[in-house]
Length: 268
Image 1 (cartoon, helix red, strand yellow):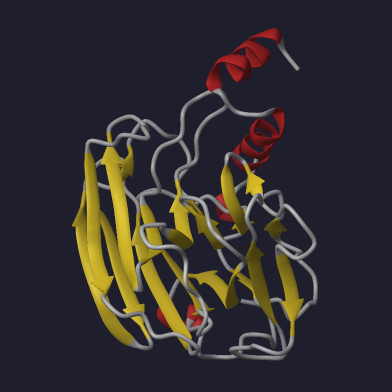
Image 2 (cartoon, helix red, strand yellow; image 1 turned 90 degrees about the vertical axis):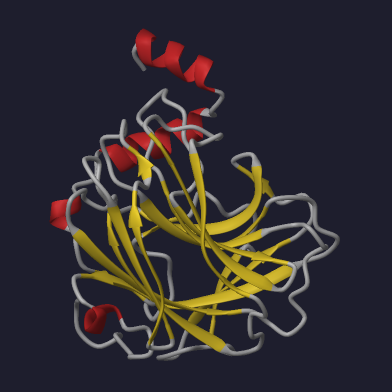
């Protein structure tokens, strides 16, 4: 490792493993992998970054709670499951979305009936995170799905330069009483822009959920945001928390990522 890089790592507050993750991301080529289906039907985590899994139980491919096909992923966190300075079990898609272009995402989420975090503790179920350069600070997620006290909030942030205290914070939409024990099919069209307004179009179970147009993310960053989902707690929990995700796709149209469709046959 070059001396300059080592110095930047030492002053950034990140671990060597976190920086190695950033390096791998910066080496990715969005133009070469615009379409993907990671629906767990292969029975393994091919295509995912698994660095944010603390234990064997953190993410398990199983066949009991499934949206489409024969398999889905069960995520679990327990008190003390700290990874990358957070209580989390997450899978990351390596892809960094391009700026000034549309990217469609689809996935299904299932929250069990007994999913009940302590009051006031937020749980991120899915998020698009900004991509920091080596040695640079990261910001708050430009888009996240946050479960809090029974509600699901869709939140975001914007600053000219990445920061944990962004200039603008958003709550795009809130589902006051999130249904439990049923699959929820989410589709997003995202257009990230460094020059003007970004766009979010969100759909739930085939119906439009919300639309946003405005400044979003961090204009100083070279790569666009990446996606990850699982279970991530913003505070301490009192016992295990479990959620399921299935049928993740990324492509260039609603039809190509519709999580209500079994995409296990053929490539995207």
